[in-house]
Image (cartoon, rainbow, N blue to C red):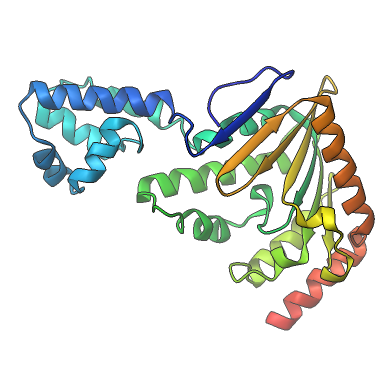
Length: 280
């Protein structure tokens, strides 16, 4: 998601949503300077070690112009620092456009309830796991973007221990999350460590306890200091952040039902410990 929403409105994003403004502006400026300097797209691509198609995507704002390509374009086109100056604004795009509103709400949250049916939540991921997910994107991301997004995900995890007063965090993970091939013993141990934090509750929903609502997808409920709540759901092609009372009520009910079926925190820790033992 891109932009910021009122707490009384819904925001939906999909594959047709606009890329971040900083991408589009920097790409447009790079194209204008290139044409002014009579530099072909192929020449810039060769100098920056990118394909002409990638340069075209950057100029259209579909792909984030990397700091390296801006520096090379600046020198090649004689922009005297005008293109390189855009790097500081592009570096702020550390999350996919469709997720940025959610990240803002997460930073403001005082309570978070999270259920995931397929992936370890970003707040609980090891760096190795996060990189494996981000690096496997199709179409692939360039290495600089991968590094920035991994760093951004690790930075988000400060919410676990650094916020004052502490943020209340409740996670329920479907068993399929823990049995995914990307989840190794190190990731399982990390879940156990985080689960010991006094402000974190971690539960597991075993296969045999799954109810129909648990199979409908992942969801997050966030509460602000003003006791306003918003719900977030994300799929492979669409995301929704909503503060509509009806949506929030339905998500709250689903989460409550799933938490009731899940193992308690102690049983969940034992469940994960047995999985660690089986992998050692």
